[in-house]
Image (cartoon, rainbow, N blue to C red):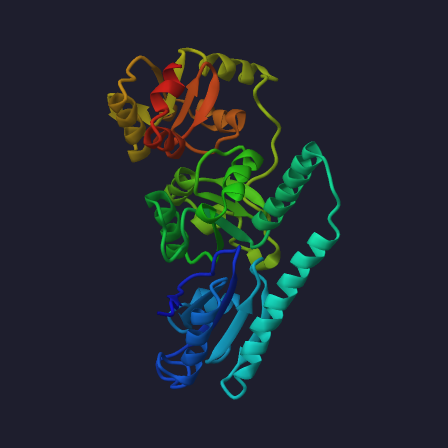
Length: 357
């Protein structure tokens, strides 16, 4: 049986797609109508094509992203997330078929050309080329949309709780985003960890810059002084707003008296937890969860610092560690990460080994 997805967010990059924007009051576009039969045909005959329906008036962000002005409208999208062709109305549905065929032919031509021009190379050269190609592909992916979310699954069908929460937060704040399902491509999944120096998913990028993971999104969202959109640098996006993060040099080596103090502070105990409150009385849910995770894994011998008690440390440690949220966990002076990374280590069974060695 043909499978047609009900799409409520921008499709994940990495696969060709065709979307039908429809409305219940427009007979040709509604399920069972003439446009729907075209989708059924594609869904039955081309497994490489993602086929979906978008209820235009109910999914305003998606409609706005593709500049939909009428229904029915078909949007044919290449694997890079770019609009290949847009067909409005139902008077010439053969155009839809021709557009999909042309997209498939171009993709096949590119693959054939790549094979035809290939020359024998050594194994070392081949590995280097693969790495360079992957790096280039990753850079294109993280810049494919103003906001790129790398998750397990898709926005409509997340495959883990962290990914689901990240999707919900962006949708609730009406932030348009594109996504990539890292479960469908292990090369991207592993390569992006190395490129970003961020070991867990989800990962969110704004204009090509890594913002972080779920815990950082939550920390931003919990800040009542500004909206999540503002903190991501998207409040004035139409006016060319810059990303919320900026480049910063590595802070492993202290360069000032303030850094000297932080350098000593993160090494005060073999394991140091910087949190809101203390283990006996955490002052935020994230800190409480980390304390509980450590207790669950029989990790009790660690130092803790209440960042609410020292605003200077609270602000300067963010810059020192290049990590914008709390809690932060250190082992032998090296930053392990925040709640999402600690949770990931706990889930894969390596938390205790990482902390106690």
